[in-house]
Each structure stands twice: as C-alpha cells, then as structure tokens.
Image: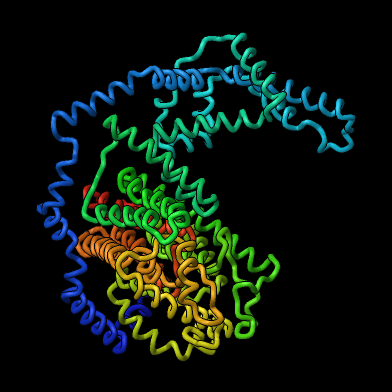
Length: 631
C-alpha cells in the first residue's frame, strides 16, 4: 500500500465522528485526573522530600554523613591503611603477574597438571583391576588439560593481549566496565622453573583433589577480584542469574556485593545515597528482623527473616551502585535476557513435557493439561515473575532504535505473554491486565478512549476467544472451584489470627504461620503454608506497624515514580520508569489473591525492581540528557 493511501486512511480514521468523540472524552477525563486531589497527592514526592530534609529525622540522617573533619580524617586513614597494606598490595601484584604472563606460562602448568591427572587415574584403574571398556572410561579430565595446553604452549602472547585480541573476551571486559588500559600489563620475563614447579605442585595435589577444583578456584579468585573492583558487575550478575540459582547462592552474591561496596565506600571510591524512600525501605527491612526475633517460634522465623533482610539489601545496592544510564541499561537488558530464557522454557514445558494437573481443578478445567512453572516451583510464582517484567519488555520494544533490537524485544514479549497464558494463573492475568491498562495511559492519554471502544467491542470478541481462557477467567470468585474455596476458607481463618495478634503479629515465615494457623483452621482446611494474600500475610506476621510501614513504602515509591512521570520532559525516561512501576503494580494486584512473597526469588526481584525504578529516576533527574538518547 502506498504512503498516500495510508495517509488518506489515517485522515479518514482521524476525522471519524466516533473517534473524535472518544478523543474528547479521553482529554476530558485525562485533564480531570491530572488536576484531581488524588493526582496531586500521588505526585507530591519532591515536596515530601523537602519536608523530610528539614525535619528532625532528615537532619539526623544528614549529620551521619561523613562531613566533619574527624570522620573524614578517619575515612582517609582507613583508606590509606587498606591501599598500603601488604595483603592488598599482594593481591594487586598477583593480578599484575597473571595478566602480564605469557600464555606459554599457563600452557606448561596445564600440561604438567594434565599429565599427572591422567597418570593418576590410569594407576588407580590398574590398582583396582578395573578395565577401560568404553571410551567414556578414559581419564578425560587430564586429557582435556593436555589438549588445552597445546595451543597455549605454541603462543608467545601475553594473557592481557590475548584477552583484548579476542572479540568475545573484549566485549565481556567492556561489559564489566574496564578499558583496554585497565587490562594491559608489563610483560613478565620468561621463566621455566616457576610454571614447572606450580604444575608439579598442582599435579601432586591432583592425586587427592579433582583437578577441576583448581580451575574452579581460579575462576573463584577472578570472580572475587572483579566483585571487589567492580561491585556493579556483581549486581548485574545477580539479577541475571536470579531465576536459575538457589536462594542461598543469591544471598551469598548479595552479601559479597555489599562487602565490596562498603570496602569501596570506606576508601572513598563509591558514595552512599539516602533519601526518604530509602528510609522507609530500611525501616521495613529492620521490622523483618524484629519479626524473626520476636516470633511465636523464633527458630522457625529467624532463617526466613534473615533471607528477607538480605534480599532487601538488593534495593540499596542498586540505588547506590547503578548510577549511569549505561549501567542501568545493562542491568535491565540482562534481567530481560534471563526473563526471555525462562519464558521460552515455560513454552517448551507446555508443548513437550508430560502433562501435570497438580495445580488444576480437573473437574472444572479438564481442558487444561498442564500449568508451566519454568525454573520456579509453582505456576503462580512463575506468573508473578513474568508480570513484573512484561511492561518492561514492551517498553524495550517501543524504544529500540534498530530493527534488530525491536525484533529481539518482540520475541521476548511474545514468549513471555504466551508463557503467562500457560501458567493459567488468574491472579497473574488480572495483575498484568491492570498494569498494562495503567501503562498505556502513561504511553498515550488517548488510551482512555481506546479502553471505552474496547469495552464496547469486547462482548463481540468473546466468541472468538479460546474456551479454556474464557472459562478460566470467568471462574474468578466461583466457590465451586476448589482453588477459590480453599483461599476463602484460609482468609477466614487468617482474619481470626489478625484479630488476636493485631499489634505485634506472630512472626516471619511459614513455620510461624503454620504453628498458629491450626488453632483457627476451618474444617477440611487444617493445614496451609500462608494466607494466600500479601496484605493479610504482612499483617499476620508483622502486625499493624509492619503493615503501615509497608503501605507507606509503596505509597512513597508510587509517589516518587508518578512525580517523575508527570514532571519529566523526556518521553523515553517516562516510559521506562512507568513500565517498572506498572510491573510492581501488577504484583501488588496479584497480592490480593496470593502471598506473592512465598518464593524468595520473587521477593528479591520485587525489591530489585523498586530499586531499578528509584535509581532510574535519580539518574535521569541528575543528568541533563537530550531527548531520545536514553536507550
């Protein structure tokens, strides 16, 4: 179709009486919403921040900052002691040596280690009177070391030069945040004795320790060095690996990043930012610890409370370490990469894995053969993860400048929506719909008119929708559905718990909940892991104070986001912040029907998303950037 024909169609569509009416209705309601008292209340964060700064609490926090000569002198003294210490100097010398050494150096070590490992395995086989009956019985670990050593022995390059000459490793180095000059080192003089001694030493150890442990130790050293030098790298790595790693590994990543950040901050290499929203996030995190200590069952509550507190550190790490547009884009991009992988895996489960009706009422929904979980343990949990990122995937597709970027974002968006459907999680569907309705209003004020037209046309579309989706959605509130009735009965029991523990709550975690729930349970629902409602659960665990602090924290977060969205002149930044905010709104809506923090990783990602939105606002407010130069 020619551009002239497209223009005529667009003009005739635009001049339509019905469309004009919808646009006028949209303008009317949009102007009323923007000037309403509710809108003023939710866009007053800057005023509240000013009031906080002038308050006693704000002045107290401000005094804690290292501005006095005594505090600054102590900070400089600690920094000087650290940087001039033997241990710190030794680590730097080791790094300089490793980067400056030639590949031949590593080749000698690997060859000798491989020789010892191969010989050791063959001797063990002989002594045990075993046979090498198949090719898989060969000592492949040692053979692999020998094979890898051959090209290294033939090379005359330094390790640093080799890293920069490889396209893949150079990109990884750039991603971490290093420049070429940061990697280059003075060449280490040729030596034969040292790599031979190291190879023999490791070879002897290989008799008792699997050689792969040495490789893991080397990678561990590199990981620690990178984290302590570039803690931002570990923040991005943590959010990228979140869906795939066990809870305690993620905790370890965050604690290590915190130590590295504080190490940098003490030395004056990083700064600490603290504002009104941060104060309430910290208050809620502290209440989590109190909920572990002062519980009906401290032994059951302290472990989950500690994990919750640890995961809330991710918020502070993001707002204090991710301070540039480049780092922010990397953080979001890698979270979307893992999000896409999880979505594709969920689609694979739906079509290629054996049906599983564990999570489905088979009497009501016989057409649903399986509900996908991807890398999560529960379809509802997977849905919670998806709805937090779907608005962001949509934003990346809209803001991508190149067709390749739009195509990849489209794949991510389509895969995530399909995976969300296959979770068959009605709460997640509802949360996603609400979040996208808000997002499109942020995107374009005329969305209100489109919603009116959509509501008028929706009854006509119902016959064309899949019956399984329609029946699943219309079953919301149907007490004949075992899932719905199960929740309602648990809510009744939970309300009784709230009435009896209104001030202090019962403590954090499912252990504390189950210890008390049995006294309030209705017949037929004697056991339950949680209340299946985020707000009830917070009230039950932390009492009215914890619930109030959480609600105020969410109010301040949404207020900060909408204050920025209303005031900024940069449309790209407005969409980005709006998308992350809508992701949080989505899970808060789902929280009405489920305890969305039951899965630790979802809890962690919840606070990470709040951190992403907060740091994005801080970056764009403090950086004069030209329009269309954000993504």
